[in-house]
Length: 265
Length: 364
Figure 1 (cartoon, each protein chain N blue to C red):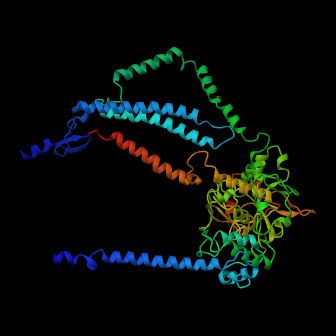
Figure 2 (cartoon, rainbow over the protein chains, first blue to last red; figure 1 turned 30 degrees about the horizontal axis):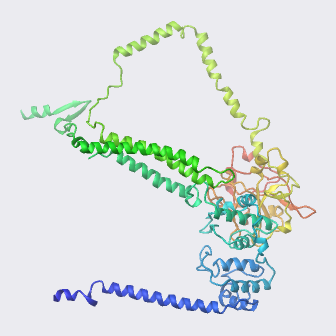
């Protein structure tokens, strides 16, 4: 009896593990609550209308350490003078800025600011020097866009990096062209207009606003319509298709061969 | 006595002494084990039903394929209906074929006789009598046909056979243009002095002032569509136009006049095996070929900095006309695309400026 009682309660071998799990859950819960409180603070500071002055304050607090106090750029970040509100909206609202970590490429993630805050920063940046503005609703209207023409323009100008099916692809030294599925129309437009990171700029003389709308319509057509040829394996071409056929095709052949030569019992 | 025994144990075989005691004894066939289906008739009956079921499933698969083809049709004009139609059709046919195979294998494994037999392979060499007979037949054939005796007929037959492949040679030669030297086709493109640089695919001429920094324009010659074979011409004349900040561009003095205000134009055809090189990174100014990862440095006249390509991309010398549109100064000074034997003969001695530091150029 005495022996058994030793192994129960806080001397049980699993007690330390249980304590660890309890501690982790508690710490995680507290950090979630604190995080929620912090973000609630952020959104409560964001009334419906923010001005360029609010944008400047947000810029000073969140961006100036890399882009300089007057957005003139530092060795850590490029100058933002003349990049325009379109660039700010794309970088902030796809979560690429502020950078999650420094690496070959800024990665998309959940946006860290509300649309109003982003617009205020855009207003501030646009006031420094003229640059491309956020596209209007009319420009982004794809109701009478030509999907086939969008596909052609996409294949000529975009497909070499982003893949014909918009599945993305590798570039040099760890950089990559991202997947273009389920991207907001405004962000596609702004990316073409401003050329974020290593993407070239496609100004309105290169690809006209109508053609840009056609491209958006084409990309959204790809989102809404499944691959005609069946399971697309990520549309990555020979890499995923080769892996599939090597693993499942050859694996199946090996399994059948084993079955064929096994002795019946 | 003991020595004699030893000699008996050794056998001379093809000049090698083999010790008999080291030979393996032929173990023969393992004892035949009866299967469950041989021992229990009810199990044989069950296996029979299983095979029947597989064949039935196969027939069902065929019917499913036909039914699906009719029930889930491909609607003209709606590409997406192909997906379900093809999926069901493929699954039906796969089921029909696979089930026959699985049923047949199961039948042979469980029900057909599995007694082991030994079939000895007969020697490949024919018997002496057969060989002598064959020689006799050939000799007789030669005598009766007069193949050796009538040498005129024999030699003319050999001559006729030798000429037979000639039409094929002419046909294959004619795959390349017959009215000009084939390498001339590679040596020159549509670009000539004054040809406007136009947007692919619309053919809109490009103004120098419209090319903003960091841009990449996909360019074709202005009169491409009027040419006899637009696609053939595009395959050689395709150009990528980029604008770099003046401090990024590191031009050699001999080629300084080839760009206009930071705008440079390079052939889009990779010098490795001819893929379109157009993955331009506007911060690093690297041009990447998607096929084999050859990387060209736009800052330094598209010198190869990585990958299997051996030569820089050919540069198109450009300038602007009176109306501000970008035009070509002349054709490329060297053949575009991958190397070929006569390539160095086609490099224009007058206009060509070799990019400094590319010793590999001599390798053509």
